Amino acid sequence: MDIKILDTEEDIIPCFPVMKALRPHLTKDRFIENFRVQQPQSYKIAVAIDSSGTICALAGYRFCNFMAWGKVIYLDDLVTDPSTLKKGYGGALLDWLEEEGHRNNCDALHLDSGYQRLDAHRLYLKKGWTLSSHHFSKEL
Image 1 (cartoon, rainbow, N blue to C red):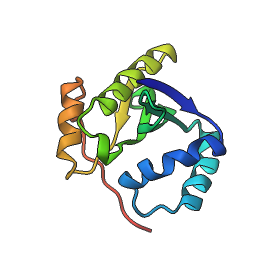
Image 2: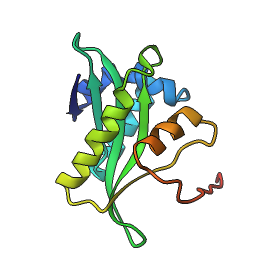
Image 3: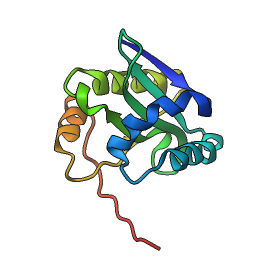
């Protein structure tokens, strides 16, 4: 398995089917547009690629600074292709993100996760993450 950062619109197009598993509301055009808008905000996509060159999982993340937490990697998206679940790709990306945080002098890693994503929560807890808050939102 190889992990690499994709940083062009052309590079991310093969990621769309994997991202769609987590974000089914996205169209390919909207995915590319969101990437274009978020990239100047330090958004990156890291992918786990198998030996055949297939993208098996991805992590969309950014560097942020917060009064509460300091400098963090905020994990916007973590998704594994449904056909490759339970093969270690998501966990490998979490390990890589932890290393990326150390390389960039971050204080912590953060993410929000849907309450129904129990398999993901088990993975986060197994990797040493803690359930530290509730996230509230209100549609405008």
